[in-house]
Image (tube, rainbow, N blue to C red; front, side, top):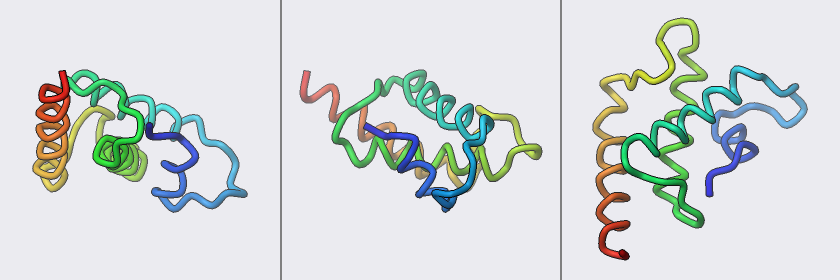
Length: 94
């Protein structure tokens, strides 16, 4: 499952940089967003991890210019594709 340490590396945050509570909020919100979209947290699923990391990076980098929870147009298609694929895979496995 996506983890905060890998999310920090995905966002190119150096290991020696202090923990940022805003980053933690963005990461937690990304997981909550995926759950709200019908995709529960998934272990060992690269698509799930990528979706969480993409959202975390977008919201963290755009903090102050967009509300957490908004998905910019340029990310919308990629994220929708990931969510649909994950929901489809989850349904097939049930």
